[in-house]
Image 1 (tube, rainbow, N blue to C red):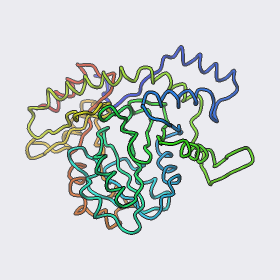
Image 2 (image 1 turned 180 degrees about the horizontal axis):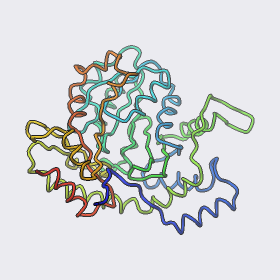
Image 3 (image 1 turned 90 degrees about the vertical axis):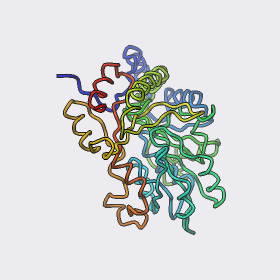
Image 4 (image 1 turned 30 degrees about the horizontal axis):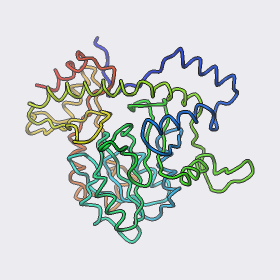
Amino acid sequence: MKKNLTVTTPLMPDLGEFSQMLKDIWESKWITNNGQFHQQLEEALCAYLKVPYVSLFTNGTLPLLTALQALRVSGEVITTPYTFVATTHSIWWNGLKPVFVDIDPSNCGMDPDRIEAAITPRTTAIMPVHCYGKPCDIVRIQQIADKYGLKVIYDAAHCFGVEVNGKSILEYGDISTLSFHATKVFNTVEGGAMVMHDAATKQRIDYLKNFGFESETEVIAPGINSKLDEMRAIYGLLNLRQVDDAIEARHRVAIHYREALRPVQGIRFFDDMPGVRHNYSYFPIFVDAEEYGMTRDELFFKLREHNIMSRRYFYPLISTFSTYRGLPSATTENLPNATRIANEVICLPMHHELSEEDVDRVLEIVVK
């Protein structure tokens, strides 16, 4: 039986050095709470990502929850239904109302043309998503936010290392959040981070992620426990050394896919965006059943029959889940592009360990 091909696979650190660093942690007797490797990883990420401040978290969801707290967001938050559930759940857990707007099919991000119509007197923030590492229309979103006095929190879970004209995508908005889950381009097994632009916000975030403690005896806010431990910090430090090689390997896979799929009727995919440094976090294709002669789901299950574990990512839309489907903004009429794209998308295997033979196995099924 041929090996199982998955959508993504994590980076693996050098085990010898990992073992030595684990020994260092054990001998120091400091395994969490802002230890030496935690501090080193924050500094290393600031340098790599070209950002001034990074705060590490134990996963990628808690930065979203904490960002809304830190910016004192209230009322309604405009967001997208075409994302992972953590985006919308973070709004709900803060006692806020998510308001869905449709997406732009050219990048699967929030459509700026739909934002202003969704703004009400209760709107205080916009939470867009850089889907598949493709930047949203950051300029227009910021213009709208400035016009109405709204905060912008970017869910940039897919955007590790992504730049626009040499500037980190994480520099846009008031706050951006990252996921370092094992399926991401860069990972700490489980983990995440928040990127902010000033020291005061960094300090407030660091308080909030440690129960609100300012000192041993002073709690200044109702914080939460979301600190990253030393073991995962060293995993991240070692993975950071090889992430550029992993991105380049993913780039080669993307080129291979594109060359083979370009002539295929009924299959659409993304090319690189001008001026953007991509990380090739995912390789989504969009299946037009009428032109392709097979539905998205038929192709999905055909791939699975051959041990190719693709993913319908993101399907179904968050707006169809029981918690959210009753919202006025959740109707299919309000979300025509998102509804169509969710029913067309398949993310093909995309990771640094894929060989040309692996990619050809996938293409044998997709290219009829």
